[in-house]
Image 1: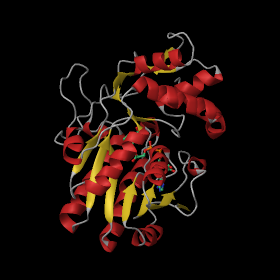
Image 2: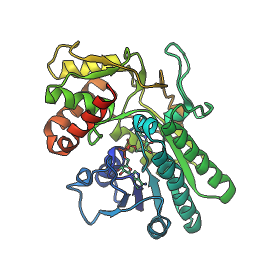
Image 3: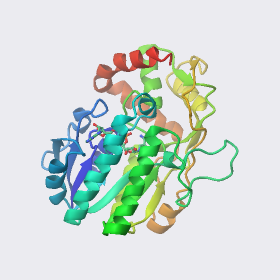
Length: 331
Ligand SMILES: NC(=O)c1ccc[n+]([C@@H]2O[C@H](COP(=O)([O-])OP(=O)(O)OC[C@H]3O[C@@H](n4cnc5c(N)ncnc54)[C@H](O)[C@@H]3O)[C@@H](O)[C@H]2O)c1
């Protein structure tokens, strides 16, 4: 297949491109605007006869039309993805997550191209810490932030384009990813690179918030499975039973990096901070036969720490500006 991967220079998109090159014969064209979050170097080392790169905006209808017409399937990762940024300036989230997705859907409709939409479990809002339930494909949407509300809006556009126009689309909503190539503004790489730089890690509030961690490579294998075997019009939740609260994650990072487990600071909590996410991925596992490979968070995190230690040249250029941004907010 010829895959068009939007946002393929970002964290999860680049992990997907590496995964596809390693595990399939598909050809990939990446369409990425290279915002502050995109990094061309995340695709370094991939064979040129398998991966092409186009710098462009998913809201640019002309560019999108040409590339979609040439593809067998679109895998749509591109998004503004950081909750904190969406609280400061929601506008780019509307432009990319809503208008960009609309632009891609219209091209997929014109050219009858298979479409897979990548989304997040944050569209479901949050759960109480002691709630026995987890999110399923039937959980009502209840997003909290400008980021998650624009992702929810994009999911609904995809559903409408399936129903009204017969676009051959599937959707996946995944829990929090960790692994290589994640921007250091995000929780886990920020703390790892802080420790490498001798800066004390920062924990929002008391750190009781729970995230359901999955390795980005497992996310990639799940997306490929859905692309190959998923039923058109369906939504699949992707998760690997990896619930951890933020306090435990910071303390584990410190321990794995040879520091005292309490060598971190508490900072003011994020406004509207979702309490807990938890995914029930039974449908994906039973209907499509998918299984995660990284079941041990401790060893997956240790490997991720090694990657950031070995790849300082990849993240160092963004470190000072990222910390200056957080410092200006007292975080
Ligand atoms: N990070 C997570 O834990 C997580 C979990 C579930 C779902 N997701 C979803 O996965 C997708 C990728 O997330 P990520 O963490 O890799 O994000 P990221 O911010 O690391 O990467 C986003 C990429 O999209 C590109 N991009 C942004 N606007 C664009 C535009 N208008 N046109 C073309 N390219 C553009 C950026 O340059 C960047 O390369 C998003 O749709 C996100 O909602 C993320």
